[in-house]
Image (cartoon, rainbow, N blue to C red; front, side, top):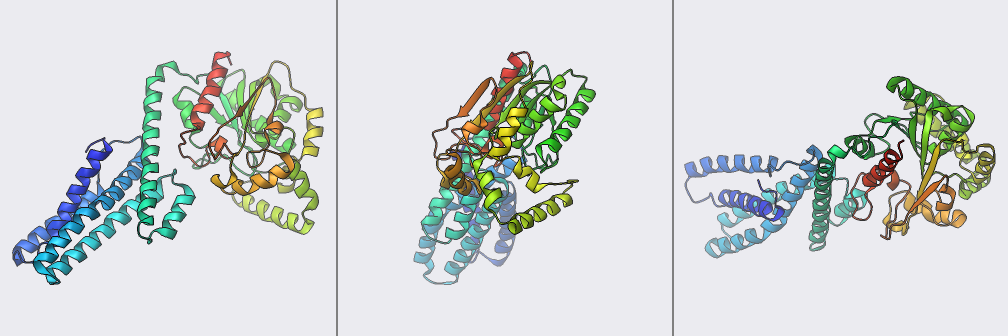
Length: 443
């Protein structure tokens, strides 16, 4: 109805409270009147709960979460006039039937409005994360505290919706520039323990945002856990498919985590260099992780083998042909990477660059990296939950994301794992800037 949050919510509150009040004061106005107005009131109440607003959003997900925030706000504000009306009814009717009828109507209506709103935001809003969902469930019945939590959740959703709308406007304003329309297609190579899935993109919103800005995107499609040598073969096979499919001479590779090692091996040892214009590695452990060495040497064989068997069995079910948990982890050790780097020099004619980040305050970050950060720090120093910045340095150009916020930027944040907007770090814009630079370099 209104794009302005304040006006829209005030109108919604007036409508809901008005409908509830009419239903609450039916008794005493005649049976026929009560039946007719009651039916109309219930119908109106249902319609408003289904369609709290008619404001267009960037997509259905944000429409539902925004409407949920509107309902929760109307619920919180509506309690005030309801209390005043109940006091008035009590002065007129004391503890009579009219008072109890109105009280039941208000409580039932508020219950519906609240849960309609909370279910909408819990199911659709990525920004409130697991933390605020759990806090809301644990303290939802604590007076005053529950209202403060509700206020926080509503504010997060408002920011998230506004950020997506700003992103849409920004993309529309620069659409003609085609910032990411590079000379060569982009191949995005995932890291270890994940797959390129159709309905759950490893890279979150990043590929779609690159495409909106002109990029042509493809994926490495290697299995989730193999040795670097075996993963490299699968990445090379996918690159050859892209070359054949597009008719392009080369590709630009953007690789995250172990995907950077897989890509380097394919370039240097398998002849993929003839198809690659650039390699951008994102938080790749080029010098390995000391903690991985410790884990493989200190963990009991029984534990390692049990974990490996469980993982391999699960990912065979999910589509991997020959998952190799131990082989994949072994390729992340500092000892392996030292030998790997000696045998895997950069190839001429390819532009190599890299990025790194770190977590600033573990408790403010996502599970499980909030726990692994301190453990990894004991061996490798500052890190993103898995990889230290010094291990991620590679190539002609290196960027370390120095974010001053309590969260910092984790290993997961660099691939938009949580899919939520942050004021201090826009991961989609970061990738757009990377690809835009490749375009400006003629790549």
